Amino acid sequence: KQEVTQIPAALSVPEGENLVLNCSFTDSAIYNLQWFRQDPGKGLTSLLLIQSSQREQTSGRLNASLDKSSGRSTLYIAASQPGDSATYLCAVRPLPAGANNLFFGTGTRLTVIP
Amino acid sequence: KAGVTQTPRYLIKTRGQQVTLSCSPISGHRSVSWYQQTPGQGLQFLFEYFSETQRNKGNFPGRFSGRQFSNSRSEMNVSTLELGDSALYLCASSLVSGGTGELFFGEGSRLTVL
Image (cartoon, rainbow over all chains, first blue to last red; front, side, top):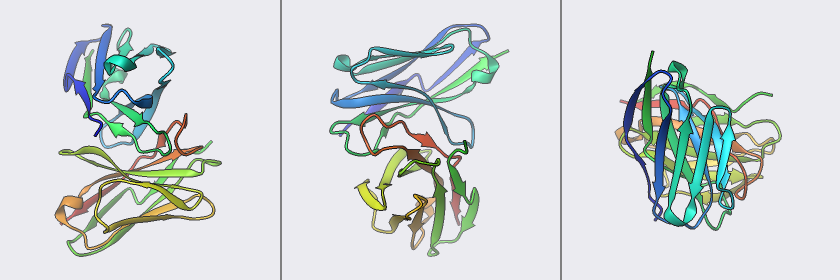
């Protein structure tokens, strides 16, 4: 069974710092990987989707990379802002990609201190 | 373009009762997936519906069921509620089932079982 791990579980950084969030998965047979953010008591907001054939995706200050063979993905946030404070979750879609059953990590709770 | 709408947002039930949650996907999306989020287990896949057919089902007891209507709106039902069913139930909408489909989540329905 696919297991997805995110380390660290919590992270506090001063405003303006660049940071990296990590996601690892045990089975490299994935179709794609998606990063989400979740604000307290809210739903999930999709940040980036990386197909298994891609190495990275970028959106604004966010850059996500994928190394499928080693079972790792990273989310890089540049010039962090207090508004980035949230829980960040990664999720993998396993092969065969016949449905939308994603396996989620446990999340990294990020706090950006003004 | 309206996002994914879930109702009700909050509800309180007692053990033994049943509950029905509703999800309206993004216009044009035909896939609706349901997830349960708890502090202990994180996000877990319940089931997915596509074109009124259940595509996949997670490892949950038969008390959890769902359906999808011709307009793609979906409902999930939990019968004979237990304390452990207290959770945030999230619905995700996607244009397609599986493949490159990106998932978009609603705000969730928070269920408390007393």
